[in-house]
Image (tube, rainbow, N blue to C red; front, side):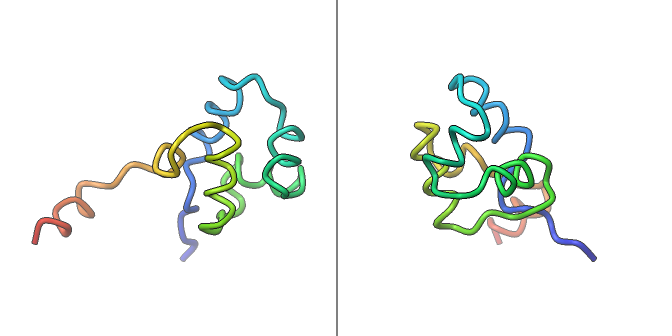
Length: 80
C-alpha cells in the first residue's frame, strides 16, 4: 500500500503560483532539485520535515499550510 505524501500537492502548487514563483525558483531557494519539486507537486514524492520547513520559508507560510487536512478518522483518534 502506497503511503500519502507529507505535503498536499495541490496546496503546494497553489502557494507557489500565488507567490508568483516557478518550480525552479522554489527549488533553488529551498535547495532541492527542480525535478524533486515537480515530484512533490504531483504527489510522486513525500517531503521530509526539513524540506517542508524550507518550502514553507520560501513560500512565506506555515508548514501546516502545505500539509493535507486531517481526515475525520485522524481527528476522532486525536480526541480519544
